[in-house]
Length: 193
Image (cartoon, rainbow, N blue to C red; front, side):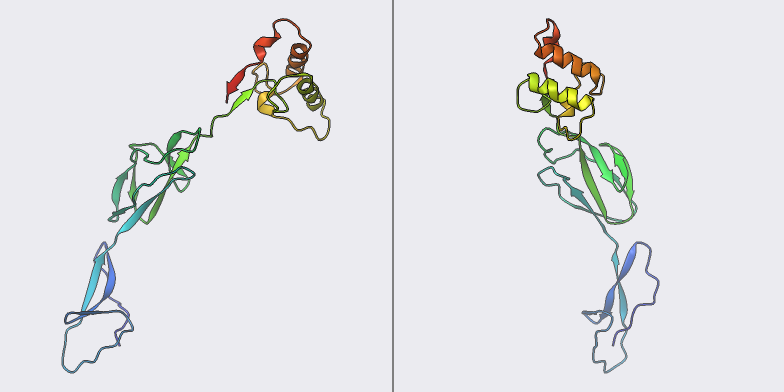
């Protein structure tokens, strides 16, 4: 029975089996030996696999096999981005990289594509997302600002003055627009965010 290998592998290699004559055996295999023979340890070069994760994108990027300590340069992304998103870079573990950056491969590695959030077009002032801006939207936003319970609205459509929040100022602008005040129509626009 062939034993476990207790020899030290040459650098960059691993034990791949035993060679007896022209046959290869693994630990635990048996062979009938009728004379003095030499059994050789077989060594294989360690190889790591670099694979690519589309992370919601589509398409293929072929895996690569590399030797240990190989410097890998992040390539251009060949995946198709999810609808409305854009390629931001690559991620390995918790670190992010740009095209052209390099890392040293020390193990099997998964490289994940990072995408921007899909852009969304909203009608500013359309708090209830029904495609129009009317008194219902003004009432809904006023109730939200007054902290009524159970108010569900599209916050991204409620920042009429562009200060990053939906508050009393936005509720006043929307109320004045829906009441027909002159000049307030400039706030009601389609915006990609």
